[in-house]
Length: 241
Image (cartoon, rainbow, N blue to C red; front, side):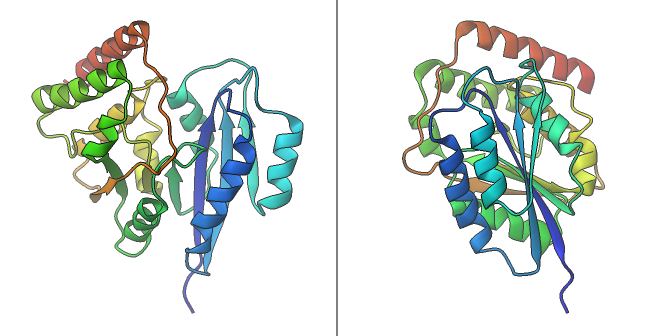
């Protein structure tokens, strides 16, 4: 008999759009429909201090339709990195996969990530975005994303992947231990995780190319945010030396 695998799926959200709960359930059902029968899935939704968009009715809808569901929240917006660390610290599964609550990538990418973690026993699997992704970004966000990739090549030549900001990543308990050592609360927590994981010679790392699903629109990035993330980059670089 095959051993049961416990998979925790973690979704951060902040001020979600109308209808988000139905969208989440729709894509969650598609995802679990193609997993092996011996996989037990629990969904963690972590609300990063939303001031609108998340109501008790939304949560009750998800509780009624998802067999294993846990809602994690706190009152003040702290950033996506903080949100994911808070939720992932609570997970108990053998494997953890995180992505945004609107499932922005093609489902085939999530299934491939699970397979690599479960069947091929990688400790960490990182999504790497294809070129089509960048062509869909608003101007400032595109410039920052491409610049960050170049900066990673220059300042972190031994990093396992240079495109660190894909919102689809997965790991086992060894990878979870590394993820929880990150400190960055905002956008570059992903990069910090890749830097830390790349330095661990005992971790088995894999990468997959991920593709944005149809219908996804990307938010703008302000100059203020870019300045904040450049400070985060400096912080990560200083800690890595």
